Image (cartoon, rainbow, N blue to C red; front, side):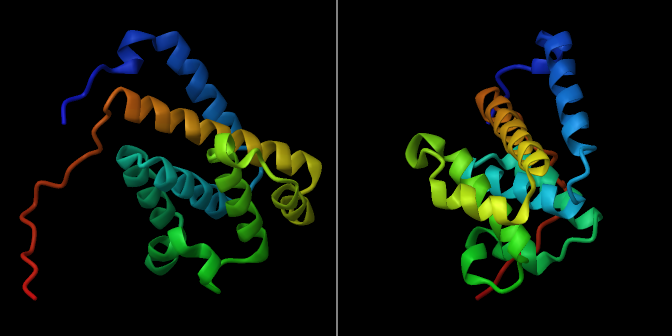
Amino acid sequence: MTPRMNAFAAAPDTMQAMLDLEQHVSGSGLEPSLMELVKTRASQINGCAFCLHMHTRDARAAGESEERLHLLSAWRESPLYSERERAALDWTEALTLVADTQAPDDVYEHARRYFDEEELVKLTLLIGAINIWNRIAIGFRSIHPVDTAPQREIVS
């Protein structure tokens, strides 16, 4: 895979505005672990390897378990996520796939049970921001860092 362009080099002021939004949303008061789960889940849905690489590393650095990261795509079938996290993940999926879901009322009401209005705005901006980052990374073919250490061969 070959990168198409470096958006930061092509439009530094515009990308700085995006970084400013990211910094604001990241400092909004939502739990860091919840934010990383949301960023990772949206990136899974969008198929963004660059963002998955970044946010799973960030989640681990913040103390997230490997088990919860591995099971994130099947969060509905796992007891490892709190009700607040489930509401956030449900809202994440609805907004990431908004063309298909139209943000259903039941998903919104589920989120409203666990997030007050201000938090729901912050969560929605978080979801919007990661979806923008996914589109930047995928659209311009950003390549995540690659560990060049020898890989172990899997023998079955």
